[in-house]
Amino acid sequence: MFKGKARAYTNIALIKYWGKKNEALILPMNNSLSLTLDAFYTETEVIFSDSYIADEFYLDDTLQDEKATKKVSQFLDLFRKEAGISLKASVISQNFVPTAAGLASSASGLAALAGACNTALKLGLDDLSLSRFARRGSGSACRSIFGGFVEWEKGHDDLSSYAKPVPSDSFEDDLAMVFILINDQKKEVSSRNGMRRTVETSSFYQGWLDSVEGDLYQLKQAIKTKDFQLLGETMERNGLKMHGTTLAAQPPFTYWSPDSLKAMDAVRQLRKQGIPCYFTMDAGPNVKVLVENSHLSEVQETFTKLFSKEQVITAHAGPGIAIIE
Ligand code: 2P0
Image (cartoon, rainbow, N blue to C red):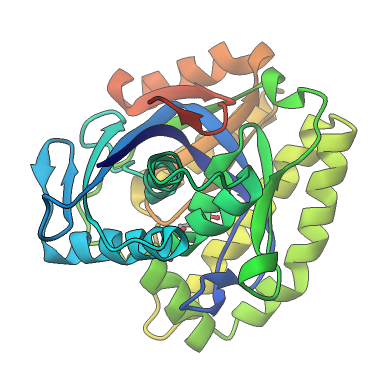
């Protein structure tokens, strides 16, 4: 029997990953850059044993269906191949996120599972290799191996596509990210399907590709010079462009809801009042607001008035993957 357990934190991209050039290997079209956060994480235990006749996957104490188990099985296969074993496994995963917030993250989940497999099978993978493996489960998971600012180098094949930490002289410790949880009950387009549809059909997608490298350059300059305004403006612009591509997809779609617009507008109003803060959004209606700790209370106050207290959650920079057992 081989056993391992790991914890990984979720991350939010400031420069988005949006589109794959290789679906099977999960190689992205562009580099992305994220901030790992402390508020939401996943703990995953894996046990490989000859007592199992098939892989099983429990998430938050619930046995998962065939589809979810298949995804985990295929991911486990990568590690079984690396270790030269064929034992089946039990995967027990716990998401530490506010209930029903729509924040369960494949990034933290797959990163934690990669770490647990590495420990269980004594593979001795270093963090860069672990990031490559995590990428094969879910693209954004490769960034959750590391804490703080992290860049996913798109690479050109399996070996060259992985994330690495971005030197920042602890700039991230000055920052907070306030989550505005917006649940509009709408049936959402998964990020995987959404990005595929965009790459294949959106006439705006080339515009995204043409400008993302410039945004990445600016964002890295902002980290280097600890320029919060440049950091925020670049993040906000890049996120808006990503969401713009979905409007020109066939069929078109959007992750925005009326409350997302309300939150974005509040951020703009705060800026008009002289409070520097900036928003970004992912494949769902939640809005994330980046602010310096020195202005955090004003942002929290504004959003708890506009939304309910339970809808406003504050996160700070979080650590990389941790092996628990
Ligand atoms: C990101 N997203 O950079 C972007 C921005 C959503 C919007 O990475 O297909 O779950 O498993 O590689 O990693 C979410 O996509 O997609 C994502 P797959 P993933 O955070």
